[in-house]
Length: 139
Length: 96
Image (cartoon, rainbow over all chains, first blue to last red; front, side, top):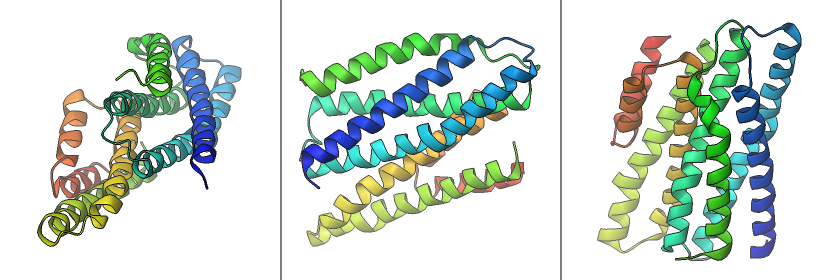
């Protein structure tokens, strides 16, 4: 597979993963307690989406990204290391959101933590910086 | 958290610890003492993915189980040390 095909697949996985991240973050940020049956059903569907679409997209984007970085010899570039720090943080955030989603389904009476409300703006800012680093490669 | 959740965390810990040992104990000496860098080129990304998988699983478990921050920090720190992942595995096994 050539570099452009790999890059296209990587970007496709990033789009699917980021879409799933925003769905999780916004749903949890605006979640009310206690949660009724309809809301719980929606949360369960979102959990399934996260497990079978958002999660695998993250694994694929990491695999493709690391492979491309290594084969293209760009591992030493400063912009790539800055991007790596941000995408590690975004992956960790995905883990936290996935766990919070599970707990929200398991315990409908328990409110989610307050910091969840900060995740949508953090996501928006991080994704914007990642896009600038990946496209403009400023340093 | 279910037994299955802990089992996943334990598997992620063992895989992370094993790939770290393979990288530090085999691939790095092969590169520096025998001039064979291919092992590091292979094991570097493999361990990177294993570490990420462990980190992701740890974050998910900590949010789901509402773990104290100190416990999450300790597990993350241990994962950075050779054999630390095996200590993590034993600690998670004791929680079940």
